[in-house]
Length: 619
Image (cartoon, rainbow, N blue to C red; front, side, top):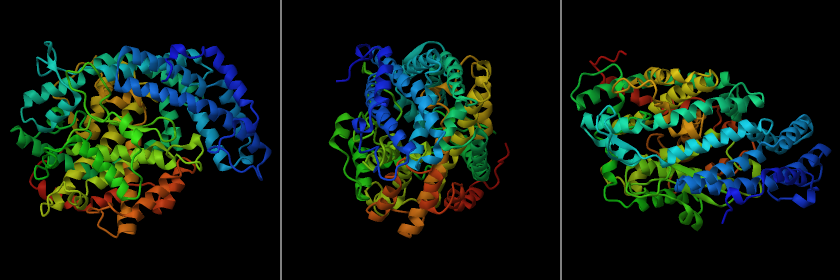
């Protein structure tokens, strides 16, 4: 059992402990996962190794303890658990951002030419982690940790409520879960009900806005203490890129895919207008779309009704089928602890227990304690999500080996982790695979053009949301220090610009609809990870289908291929031991780009031209 933060040693005792550990001789802190053969080491490398061994011996147990407490708070969001998470986060932040670590990594990196690549990568990771919690400004870090814990607690414990009036107000009609909101937005044909449900999903923004006002300032102060121009610039540093370089890469991908998106937007608004018997608008009303943020546009191709294929299935079979996909590639079965420790299914609306409703994968100890937090129900969305989250889990397991230093047990950048998850989801959508596992009845494969159209309404639309709305808003929020009174207008201006979507009615200026997205609160200024992961995903998929399986990229079945598993393990097992651009080039023969995505969707242009013929597509 993990001790509650109140039972931990006082903060003032942790710093002497850190000093002692960092001063230990190499043999006292030797760890196989961080130490290489000592032969031919330079004096600087030996010195750095002693430091890294001491840091690892202290930081990893502390991070593990924090992750376990964080897990408890996410799966049972009581005030007591949230308070424990706050205390544990403070301890973890104080250790990772210690001035000793900051100063020592700076000293050692000043001798970078004398160090080997693995040592340099570990030192840079330590420095980047320290920049999130620099002990040079302890009061600011403590306030930020407390504010983030409070914000996450609000998210995890919030009860969504249908309002008496469709546009909000009038009191609570009845509580509604996140899964029920998603389900009604996917299925309901009643626009009044849809507006009421959509509005209910946004009410949490009011409660979250004050905390976000505080966090905008605190996060920027933290980043600037270590020389970054903003918190957004700090998160971009994970890619060894500047803000300008990152935005240029993302804007280039948006420009390349914009013609396809414009065709999809025209199809969507006319299809939805016909469905709801309304004139076709220039901007799609948000409550017409089957997703709370319009990040994907499900259910528009009625000939492709995947949810119907899962009717009557047990939720457990969804997760087991995802495990079966990975084991067919030669990955091991998930450890028994995964099934014992994970929280995979919804909590009833009537339950007193509240949990985070966003699907996630957890690597508790940088070794074999892997878990997932989901709310699986038998439908297509959760079938995809299960394959996605287990992609993360198998990535965790693949690099948790003695060959990878503990401090480098991560993806070479955050997008690579998302790409591996997304690759599993993409593979799970291929019709040969769905037929093989019995989701699609034999001889009932859908028309490929319609299937591709539905796929484009996910991936192409997601790119506009991830690289467009979310990234530009958070760039403005931190790099541009956007004043709070401008948030709501800027948000909806960017939703209109990138997604072609408008709110169902005028939104209150004092609300914070951007705050309703989980990531803005508890995974801030990182949503471009999903955009880059989309590009990487299609590049990996293209290589697998064309070079390994010799199959059509739009009807490609990975399942049962040891060669595909070997290819993926070859990337996964590296963890963060090499530069992400080198891994990308070695794996696919090319740098990151929209090339593979555009080739995958090349036939979609003709399908959209046919479907949009005679329609007004101007905006």
